[in-house]
Length: 288
Image 1 (cartoon, helix red, strand yellow):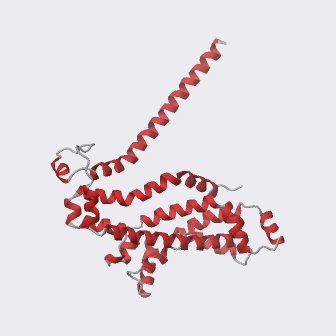
Image 2: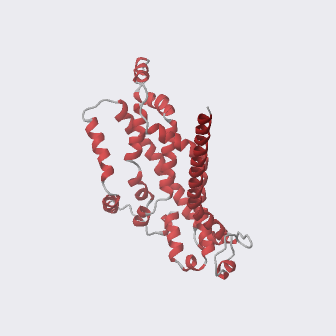
Image 3: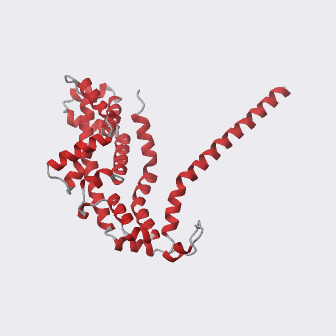
C-alpha cells in the first residue's frame, strides 16, 4: 500500500514537472514571437530626439508621444495607401469567395465527366513554384494593358486551390440525404447551396474569408511588380517607399508608427476571430 502511494506521488510530481516544462517553453516561445511587435510599438511612442540619443536601446520610452503617428500620415500619403489596400482586399476576397464556393459545390456534390481528373490537375497546380506563376501573370496582365489598375491587381488573386480544397472537403462532409431531400422538395442546386451548404459550412467560409483578408493585406511581391504609379500603391508598397526615402531612414520612430498603423487592423481581426479560424481549419481538415 505504501509503495502504491509512493508511486502515485512520484507520478504526480512527474506530471507537475512535465506541465511546468511545457508551459515554460510555450511562454518563452510566445515572448519570442510577440517581442518584435512590442519593440515596434514602444519605438513608435518615442520622440525622435529620445530615439537618436540612446546609445543603448531602452525597453520603455521615457515619455510617450503620439507625434510620430501624425508624421506618418503627413510625410507620405498613408491614408491613400490604406484606402487602396482596403479596396483591393475587399474586392479580391468577395470575388474569390464566389468563385471557390461555386467550384467547391461542383466538385463536392455534382457528377460530371472528368471531375476527379480535373480536381487532381487543379491540386497539382499547388506544386508549381509561385515565382513561375507570377511571371506568367505579369506577362498576361501586361499584354492586357492592365498594369497600374485595380483590375490588374485583383485578377490573379481571385482564386485559390488551397481554399477550394478546404471548402470542397467541408462540403463533402454534408450528408447526401440532405441533397436528395432538397431535390424531392423541388429545390434547385443553387438554392440548396445557398440555403443549406453555405450555412452549415459557415465556420470554414469565415476562416477562408479571414485568411484571405490577411493574405491580401500583406501582399507585397505582386503589387510591387505590377504597379509603379503611386496612385495604386498598397500599404506594402508604401512601407517600401518610406524605407527607401530619407524619411524612413532618418525618422525611425515615425517609420515604426507607420508599421503599427498598417499592422493594427490585422492584429485586431485575428484576435477577434481566432477561435473561428481554429474551428474552421479543424473542420476542413477532418473528414467523417
